[in-house]
Length: 256
Image (tube, rainbow, N blue to C red):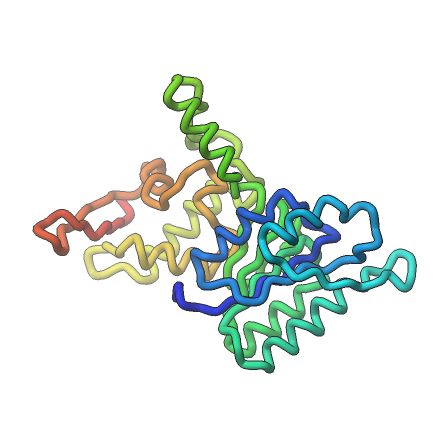
């Protein structure tokens, strides 16, 4: 991903908790620079009261949208209209749509048709059509708060930290099964491997994200793709020195 992407972050506050405010912005910086930061909702609704502190701390711009009719989410329309206005302004190269609502599926598709990077974020209840419409989708549940990371480090020092999830154990988020991930990786290796069957793990990762937008090693308790692939006994792994006096390795895999 181009870290210089200018990304419009649009948050549907009516179905995303304020507790994710910092971690979602931290995640966006892995893909580019947050420029527009807008949060949509009916701010007269007491249920959004907790969001108000986050608006100030993280410099979000609140967009007021009254609910004109009971049972209808007027914020969806406001967010979609703003997204199209921002698109036509030509000031961004990507969008981050933070919602668990499938109503934004067509918006994600339209933005991608315009050549935009579309990053989606939502909870595990997010419907598949919206997930598939995004170039990359991240489950908010796998993004831990900074204080959680500090607590984890303290527990590790005390020997109280829980071990990472291993193959066969329940994933941190109910995304695609490990069996499906393994099968997809095998298909990728078969498709783009060289004459000896080898393919770089980086290429595998890129192809995997295109086929499965919600794939994220953190869903399964791992931080790197190599850690996850190493648990699959059907693959052979090779590390080839490529630079810096042999200190930098290119990781290759093939089917045994």
